[in-house]
Image (cartoon, rainbow, N blue to C red; front, side, top):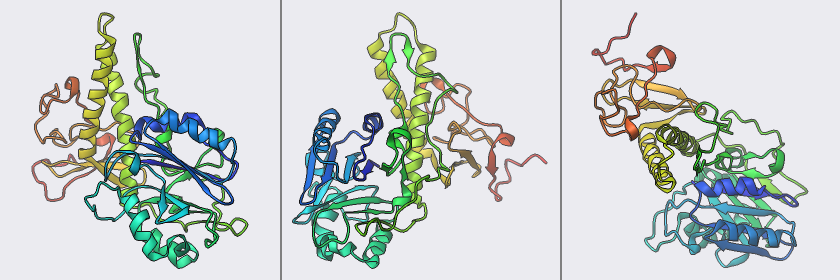
Length: 374
């Protein structure tokens, strides 16, 4: 997962975007700024401290920069695995990454990106490997589904910076104009509890802040003043679609938890307990949704019923269903719908199913038990 943010010379991502991303990517933070003769690097496990350190450095140096917010997928959750990483012994080149690299766990506690930076890329010649199209194309294909940003002041490099698989991310707008983001997790707002209820506009009024058909309004440069390169456009891969879907399911889960808690709220309730319940419910829902749903295409996702085999296909903006519209069995446990979500203890007995004619359903042609209505 993670979020990787690239800021060309003179650009700075808004604090709001980085702070919102830190709520969902909270396993460590790091940044780097390129100067003509060195790379400044900072890391911290605390977002506010990392951001303050970055902005202090940014006030003195306005070169190309990156900021990374981590979710642990491999390796220990500690400062040594916070991005960015020096490439081998080259202290003039760093790399940060979003995604999963095809790197075996070496059982040392190092993350996949750290292994790549410290052990694998140096064997290919380090940053000079990316001086030609062959190196860039090779790395883009090898790291399919991932995004990487290199910053370098190494005189042996043709470029100031390199973004691998840039088209799998997007360029920001408004306060983030000219800033590149590897995914949209910075757009999600996380509601918090107050004694008046959960902040937010309520069910149906949530601003998802994400368009799966987003069109980049900026031209993607392939060569800027002979010193920078972006990778050639890469198709949206299954792993990239899964990453995108994860964040959207996470967003659904937190809003639904807000609604369920809000419906149960009483003035006499202990706010701290309600807040704890809110996060517990959200994470429970997210765990179930991730097991149930898989990408269908670039703007849809699907659940396959374990009983009748029908695929229920929903748009990313549609609320995830808990039960099959064909046979009413639970997507999570396969049990019968009881009307109160008790088949597998859905939070607060919540359950939801669409009418078959209101969503796209692809029935299993081999199923003869649940016959489609003519």
